[in-house]
Image (cartoon, rainbow, N blue to C red):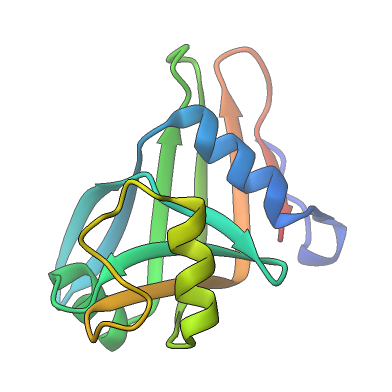
Length: 144
């Protein structure tokens, strides 16, 4: 495995990352609660204002954990089982109705949320890094 300095890492559009996660279908978000890691499945993801956004509920433990510590890791495995992505950064809550509505419009299956309720949370990645892995080639790390 070859490591590169931060200034040599390729910068990509968050849309590239979103498309990869869509190919995975379901991906897993890991958070930390004290000294315990927690992981759960997600599928709602979109790009809004050049940021990668996710949807959850403010009443959920995942949101409470990210409020304390915004660091996370995402892992998504393509359906072929031999390619995957790991994503890190910091998730930032965006309480604007326009961001919530955009996310809900792009993910219409989430009937339990509304752009104007007190529970819906949309979070975007700040300082995102992703590494693509494959059994057939060397890892590729990007920033977005």
